[in-house]
Length: 76
Image: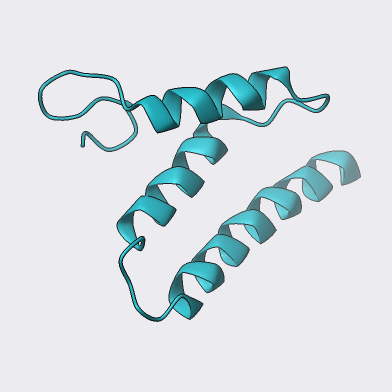
């Protein structure tokens, strides 16, 4: 998988990622595609881990950074 391109090494689009992008665009509050992609790739990287705690912690950090950037943007 090429980092955040949404394509596998053979140039085919990742259908799960394409679906997540489409749903994110249809949401009342559109989620940035880079956030959706980062969360997707994080989950994909950890999908076979027996211990889900690391995945949850990474997702929490990523979402906290995103929310923090929104708060900082509103404070300016």
